[in-house]
Length: 67
Image (cartoon, rainbow, N blue to C red; front, side, top):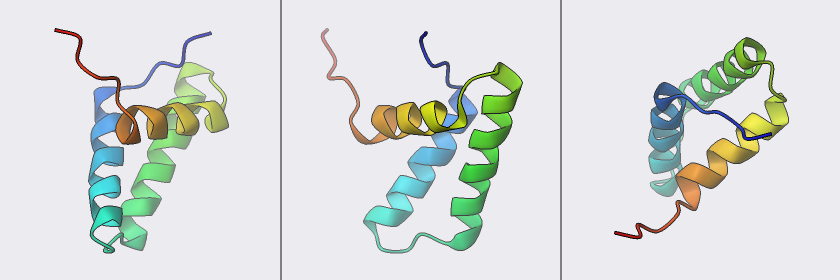
């Protein structure tokens, strides 16, 4: 089953990842991402773990453009 991610969730993770890269990830940002992952997993009836892993993969290791 493919893991579905919302654009909002991807943008939250991108912001958190950018903060991490600058060694400035705040507890508030991390908590917002975790809360969003949990809410998204519950709303879409997907595994929270699977949602988080796919989200990190999409943000941190995006597929190269094939255009």
